Image: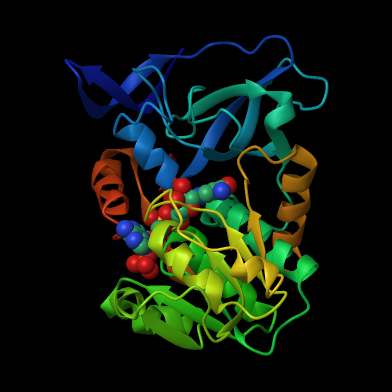
Amino acid sequence: MKYSAYYVEEINGSFAASVKKLDLNRPQNEFVQIKVSHSSLNYKDALSASGNKGVTRQYPFVPGIDAVGTVNESASNKFSEGDEVIVTGYDMGMNTPGGFGEYICVPESWVVNKPKNLSPLEVMSIGTAGLTAAASVLKITQSSSLHELSTLVSGATGGVGSISVMLLSKLGFEVTALTGKSSSENFLTNIGATHILMRDEYLDTPNKAMNRPLYSNAIDTVGGDILSKMLPQIHPHGVVACCGNVAGIEINTTVFPFILRGISLCGIDSAEAPIEFKSHLWQKFSDEWKLDLSSIIKLTTKDNLNEEIQLILKGGQQGRVVLTHEE
Ligand SMILES: NC(=O)c1ccc[n+]([C@@H]2O[C@H](COP(=O)([O-])OP(=O)(O)OC[C@H]3O[C@@H](n4cnc5c(N)ncnc54)[C@H](OP(=O)(O)O)[C@@H]3O)[C@@H](O)[C@H]2O)c1
């Protein structure tokens, strides 16, 4: 049997993607074959689709770190044909063919049951970006009881950023959204941002080893100069959840925010998180953290993925892009 997939090939050192028919393998040894109804676009998928060998070592390849669908055939005792399931992260979409194909075949240990009161579309509106936002928010709520000042979210219109803003706002936090998009004011206000800061203006002010505390806590989705700048602006004993690197992998800091204010810089890794933790986050999204994400999603198909990938690589996406395999 053949299935259709967004397929990235390396031809003489260049990378090109097209929709191709591929052979479907049967699952063996506790693997589960899933018919994927939806996937979503994350920054890591764009890196894989454009030939970043730090993400995907060998091509040709089918990216897609997120997938939701129905078990089609199972070689696992845990999952049976017809089960509605979710797979996010681990090696899927990195070196194991991912959700940009209509079928995936993955180890049972990567699979969670889909909560009944989340639709497949809702699940992929959340995706890895949402799990990362939720893990960041959880880190803040568990590690810091400070709420007097607002919480700063960088890359606020992006996938992780926008869901972070929505979750924080739902939980009653005042949110300052830091963005590079001057046209995004309405979008950010509508999803719950109380204050909006433009990235150029934020970076224009001089860097200091210590600054007046301006934010109780922060979620940083971009790294680099922006993370460096926010550390001295965090209130004593506040928490910064660090989860992204689109602005750079290096930070420039002193020890002062840590030893004079006791702030915590906490790393977030949702891709390799234990499956029980992912399951816990999905339950939260299906219950007390349920969000209406319909206003921040854009639906696309495999044929239109190239342009969405180019846009996310330029930092131009707003909200989440959901890929549907359904006709
Ligand atoms: N740690 C984890 O487990 C984990 C999981 C998922 C994603 N991530 C990482 O989180 C980051 C965001 O992922 P995503 O899927 O949300 O991507 P995304 O949708 O593209 O969001 C990134 C946002 O960052 C801002 N941005 C882009 N380029 C920038 C630059 N050069 N300088 C400063 N800001 C810039 C833009 O928002 P504004 O225009 O609003 O500023 C952009 O929309 C990526 O680095 C990704 O690899 C980490």
